[in-house]
View 1 (cartoon, rainbow, N blue to C red):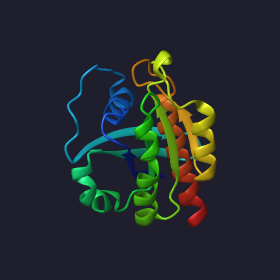
View 2 (view 1 turned 90 degrees about the vertical axis):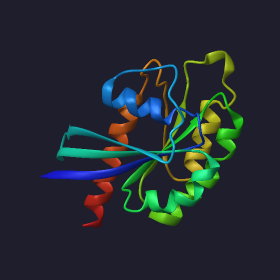
View 3 (view 1 turned 90 degrees about the horizontal axis):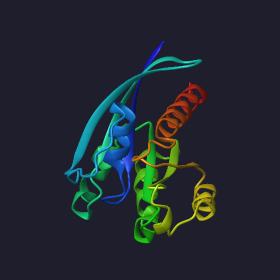
View 4 (view 1 turned 180 degrees about the horizontal axis):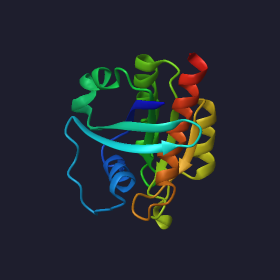
Length: 173
């Protein structure tokens, strides 16, 4: 059996969504990515134990306010989302509710995982793991702390979301 899944990365501009995707797909990190304008579409084929072949279509959405009107369109048909905030940026954490709402409005109860990114910037962290965990629990989603720079938990985040999506699809059929 093979699956084609649509995953979206959500979150404010500059939280590291593009860096996470490139770390996952190419295992590379660059200090400077240009801000994503609109949407970036990437693909990764995986083999998931118990399910078989999965082709993940990863939609990296621009986080700027100006793309807000396009969100609903981009979220159409999404099987799951990684909700990303920057652990060193309080505002990116405070804006999560907006992103959760956009996703829930479009995709109801499809799986979401909260990602606290930039864990490598230890001395600048403003949102601790505990706060992150509480938010994830309150919103009924998993939570993973990552660093696109070091690669910490990046692959695990994508694979965990993939498995949750596949479990979700299986439970619906």
